[in-house]
Length: 381
Image 1 (spheres, one colour):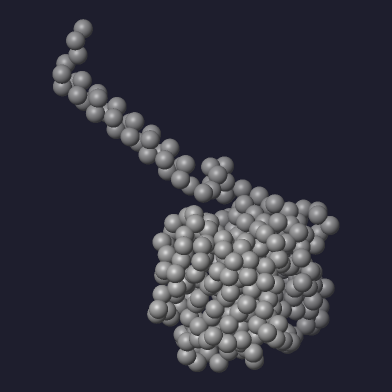
Image 2 (cartoon, one colour; image 1 turned 180 degrees about the vertical axis):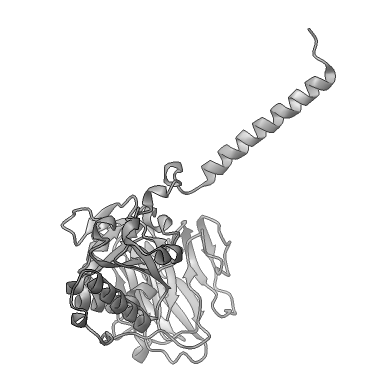
């Protein structure tokens, strides 16, 4: 039987709509960076014993979030830990960090100080190491950083961003405080707020002692004041973080932004403030740029007190650093020698300028003696 022409058109249209929706759904799911089985985060929400929790607290705060899809555990003898097992016994600080993050590094002396001061009074810290770069997923690299920074509390490797996404986090560093009843009662983004955070820790430890029938007067008072803290610049003007990799190199001014592969760069006559310039042949990868020719150069006019770079190399690479065409001298960072040279032989954050005047723009020049330097970022303080 021949179909009615109008019905055929209606059926064809409906079929086309259904097929379009299916294709769009597939395209959407394929485009997500999170595996489909990771999108359901209900398993990360901790079920609390409501009979022990005041109704007003339950209405005011969100329940704690569990560690989700960890890649490894450090400072735990490789034994797994979770948040659930600590609720009702300890006050917990969850700290999101990654070891090449300048801002994170500046918070660590305070966090270490809090752990040492309060660990015997019902306080626990769980460091969640969520990497920004692929090499930060390597356990040996993270362990070296833990040892270098003197971290003694448990650290979770969050290589798949499971816990990061469960907390709906977007920042390095970020701190969450979980009280004795299992609620997230405090949240701080970035550096600073150290006195406020410590006072909150003391308040929560006193609440814990009261609930457990312990002596509140035993909780330490005062404020941790670590030695040798590198203060962040208080100037309102500061160069932004600069990325070399094609996925985020928006400030690459003398090349094709976002283009992967080898490009040949020529230094222009005029350099704009806080813009990145390369010289020589560079292979642009997603996360980093790698020089292909000896004596390739990096130029960056900056405004900051301190200048850091995330660098690595396929082999040790010697780099000459100049500030306004001269050896930095009194402004040498910790990784430079007296002649302005540094060796890049690890995958980490390097400090190349220290305690600059932070007055006016200065031009940074790096001369890379051999190929195979991997440049990831500039960061400033």
